[in-house]
Length: 309
Ligand code: 1BN
Ligand code: ZN
Image 1 (cartoon, rainbow, N blue to C red):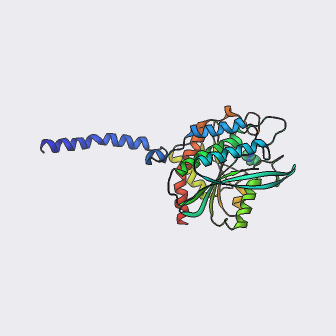
Image 2 (tube, rainbow, N blue to C red):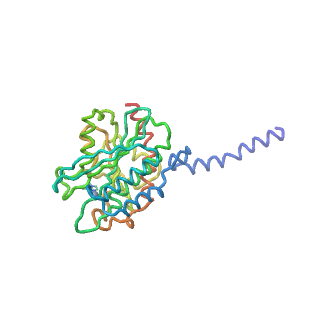
Image 3 (cartoon, rainbow, N blue to C red):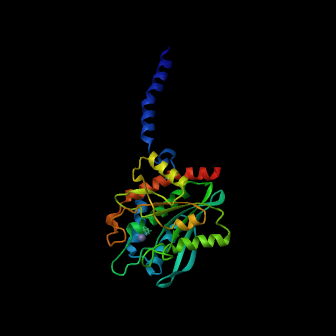
């Protein structure tokens, strides 16, 4: 072997340890770290959470609820995402309450859509100041940051709809029709307008802020969606997505009843749930990052599955 061939061969061998080290470092990293795409940024999501909590209690029909909606609209406008308001009267045990869902749309190649949702109302309590840092603000904050990251992906196979739901909370006890006003209205409206057929999947985020995040598989949810999301969590080594099961009634039920594949990503194992302690101290940016990373890793797989079926 002449000297120059020897040198190029040895240089070739010299890059292998580096290449292996890079591959090992990337394993278990979010897809964005591997592809150079925009990554979910929990410091941005945290700011959205902080802004909502600073508004104070945000029950349906209150001026603070309108302020929250205006904040969401303004944030989506900054991202260049068009929003449509869906107003309706929630017929509650307290009488009719004016409620409004907000729908942000990121158009894809297909008009068929994947909807990602969160409720932005907080539960009405007359005897305490309830600001819903996890229950209301956390999922809404993550959804706003997901909007930015999904938009940055460029051409999408499916249209992605960001659905900010009003009236998830019961005005009193969670029973009968005193809950999920916004999701029930959205599904009825989609049925009436003939757009339910093009709704291919619904992913609900709820209460994802807990510092000590533990998310169980939700048993009402559609199996294949759960498998894809929990598979992504396993790849990213995120043990917060636990291999245990729980059952929750939430905004995904009207979608499931309408035959739409749906998943509820919720941490109900939250000591501060529906207490005055559901504040900024009880939640963490890291928890929003976990859910954001897992969802962004799962989304291409969900799209691939929908393209096949
Ligand atoms: C989630 C957040 N939910 C209410 N606030 C839904 C729910 C209802 C969860 C009843 C558990 C029991
Ligand atoms: Zn609640």
